[in-house]
Length: 205
Image (cartoon, rainbow, N blue to C red; front, side, top):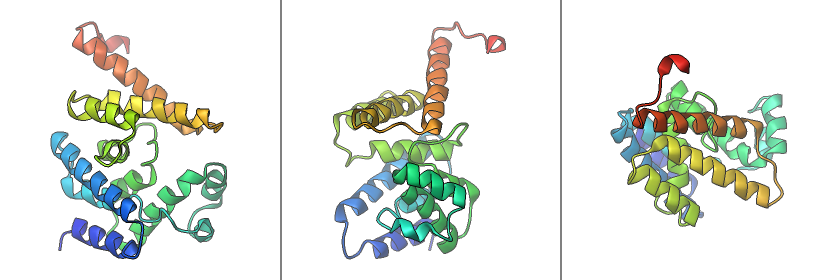
């Protein structure tokens, strides 16, 4: 049995009695992650494991974080509750499967990424936003940029912009790291545009 088969079995068992839509989402993320891993020459097996496990703890009680997450992480999650499931899912992966640091980080930081993330991390982050079951107009728009236009950096940037705009419309503040990742990918998009126009001089930064 491949590790991705084990990860799939774990999440199927976890959600066997409910949350059908969540399971459909997870399978959609795995499908998109596999597609992107092949396109960008990333280990497909790692991408599928991370995708299957990324929402493993989606509905776990935040109280479960006690004794699992660090005090600093718990404090962060109390301010940004949507991070609980990502951090707990990463710890569940660490506990239940053979450990790989890149897979662990891809799960832990899948909500909005982190500065200088690996390609695997980037793939899981954007696969979560653009998988086929996401039918919001913003997700459909970003999926087109990602799949049809072959523009990973722009897709990640636009997903961050749209997510932050949505959070702010609800009166929520963006996570500081979310802002940093957005600014990093804004620079990447600009660099990509300059390269395409043959005006980018690497020694000028």
